[in-house]
Length: 264
Image 1 (tube, rainbow, N blue to C red):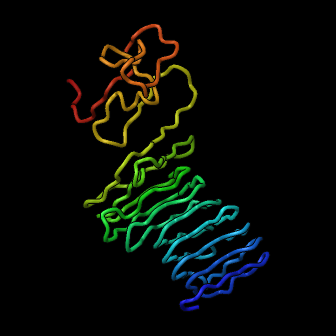
Image 2 (image 1 turned 90 degrees about the vertical axis):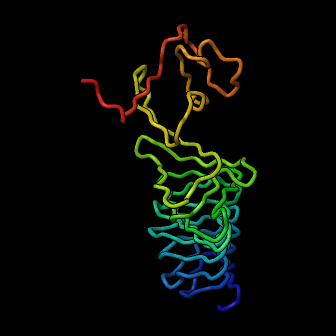
Image 3 (image 1 turned 90 degrees about the horizontal axis):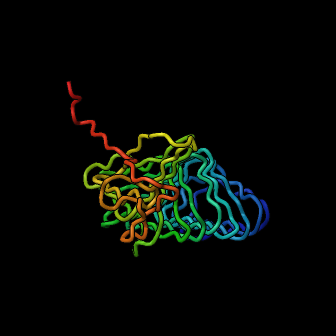
């Protein structure tokens, strides 16, 4: 199908086992991919109410466009995208990896919230390799890894998108090591799951260097004898969580530095 577009426009159909330039899956029903379709040299576009499931690793050199009302399921396979990832429908990650490996800045777009399991950002020629521009937000439940000099813009070109590293009772999302000049720019939301066990002390840590108490007070109140305590309620920190029900300014957080040797 060199230089062409092939569209499957009926109800449930079997997609011919072949490499494609542009592949369009339209109409309705399940479009059954075959193992021979492991390369789409330009774009893969889903429209109508179709669904499709990966049956082999697929390299999409251009865009993956999941239209409104459609579903793309990774299956038990990892996929590579060289263009933009546009999700206006449903994306099921199947606990697999998506690799962004483009020759220019790639964008994660769409109007539907998107959850990835593992993400890998490959290094390209541009200053930013992948930027987030999904209006509904993007979640990571597995691990995000990077080539040595890859850069991910987590809150998008105008700093208003939301990238969340998810934490649940079963597992925590995580960011892999950043080697070379690899970097994440912009704001990242990092969750830390806690069971409802009442008033107990918990060990918490931060995924970024040099956090402040005020950084944490956007989500949880922190009290104690310091300027900016959550009790009494602050007047200079509109984003800080108030300590509802507090009647005393007792210390609620302590710091532990493992680099300091224990006293003999």
